[in-house]
Every structure is written in structure tokens, then in C-alpha cells.
Length: 313
Ligand SMILES: [Zn+2]
Picture 1 (cartoon, rainbow, N blue to C red):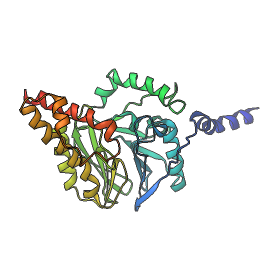
Picture 2 (cartoon, rainbow, N blue to C red):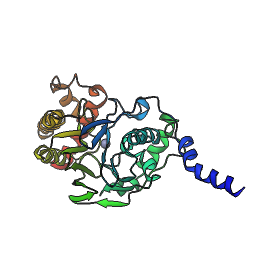
Picture 3 (cartoon, rainbow, N blue to C red):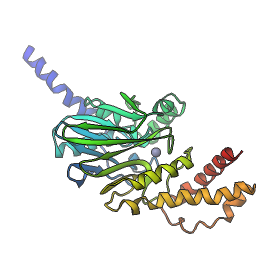
Picture 4 (cartoon, rainbow, N blue to C red):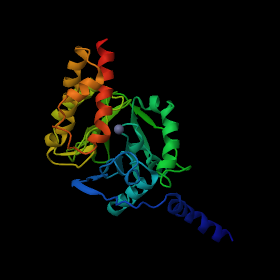
């Protein structure tokens, strides 16, 4: 009897793991970038499309264990990512670096937390976790992304807050975290895997689609991009879109787009032109063929207009 119970108990973790997460219908596949650095390319879509698989994540295998960068938009996706990691290594998941606390990057955290990983997140994370947005959005995603986000999905708190540039090592690997402050979200940071010369930027960079501006601080964002563009690297993984070994090209769209928004709307705010009139008068042809233009551009422009009004007042 005791033997049977022990057997059951030892099987329990596997049973829990197998039952806990709804299978995904999208293809979650790890791509090897360089040496031990990998990334999981998400699909190009809006928040609740493709089962929420719209952002990138990554991982680096070190001699001591696995470092994960971001955790995708549902526990099911993170579980599928874990299966991909397990095809490469059986080493423990030691650490998750969260670029920023936005739903599409954090709802998978619980999967890695349950593996025993430490969670490191940028300063500003608690502003998000203590806001009304955090529980409200989770509730709405439990419906919109059901069954992949459901009543068992919970917000995971960080174990450590990063509030400055931080170098650290895991096993034989050296990493550099760059903390940008409140840029695209309440707090953003990037990860440079020094051994692989691979930069995971989080949502400072969107590739292949119009970025989501939301309540970003666009001036700081442009400054942060100047810094990222000067980083020496061989491979680059944006928060959304395809990774590449041509970092400058991959960063180009976000950089040009943000500068364009600021330049055009600064003129409008300076001359006290109403938003609607200004929006109609701007020539958007450079960007209007980019994915997510229809969904995001007007909202982005309005957000930047309000932001510029507030800083010029
Ligand atoms: Zn984001």
C-alpha cells in the first residue's frame, strides 16, 4: 500500500503538468540563433488572435541551467515552450527575465515558476501589479482567450526587481540587463547574452508591424532606442516580429515610426491644430502598408498627441 502511494506521489508532478494546461493549436517552435541562444517566434497579430501567441520569447542554455526571456501570453503557450526547451536540454529552468509586465509576455510565468525558476523583472512591475488594469485585463482574457487563459491562470510576482544596468552570470554564461525605466510600459529592460552576442530587446522593438504605443513615454522610448542601436551584437530578437542577424535593419521600423509620430504631431501641437484635422493632414504612406496599421496607427497617434500636449503645457 505504502509502495503504491509512493508511486502515485512520485507520478503526481507529471500528472499535474499534463492536466494543467490546455493544449495549443498553434505551432510553438524554438529556433536556434547562435550557440546556446534560442527564440520562440510569435505570430503577427493583435492581443487575442492566434490563441494569444503574438509575442516572442527566448531562452539560453548555460552549464548550470536554462535562462528564459519572457514567458508568452498564456500558460498553455509557456508549457509548449517548455516542451521545446526539453527537446534541447534537461537542465533546470533557473531564471526568467521579464522584459516588462504586459499580458502577452507574462501570462506564461506560472509554468516556469512551478519549475522552480526565479523571476526577475524591471522596476515599475509593481505599479502594474498594483493597478486595476492587471486584474481587470486578466479577467477579460479569461473569456477572450479561454480555455488557454482560465480561472487557474494567475499573475506571478517577481522575486527580484532590477532598477539599474546589471551584469550577472549563470554557469559559464555572462549576461547584461539594461534597465530603461518607463519607456514602452511601466518599466522595460533588455537582455544581452554576452557569450552569444544576442540581444533580446522586449517591446522596445516591434518588427514587421506597427508598434503598440499605449501610454508609453515616447521621448524616453526614442532615447532608449538610440542606446539599443549602439549596442554591439550579432543577433537581435525583438519583442514582436522576426529575429535577425541584421539588427539595425530590424530596428528600423520602430525607430522611424516613433520619430515620425513625434515630428509630425509636435508641429500640430505647436500650432494648436485639433487632433482630427492634424491626423487627416499627415501623409502616412510610408507606414500604411505595415501590418497592424489600421488597428494601431490612429490610437498611437492620438496617444502621442496627448503626450506631447502634456509635456508642452
Ligand atoms: Zn508590451
